[in-house]
Length: 66
Image: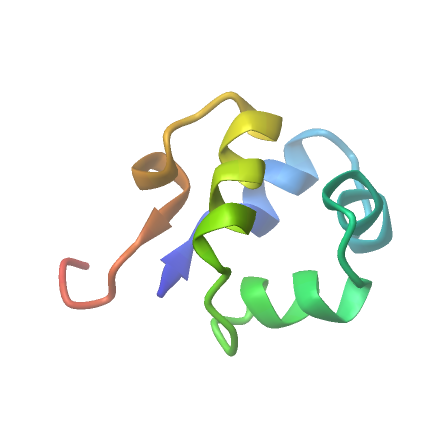
């Protein structure tokens, strides 16, 4: 799954650790999501969506659609 997490995080000058803290997950989880090695659970995707005030579709994109 492609995502804009790294870009959105960088726009706010947040480290992976900063974002992980805000989402109550590990930094390793953020790293894996950013690299496309891990797809977030639906509850985590909603949490990310609320944090960035964007729809899930604006952050995450199915690679089949890309």
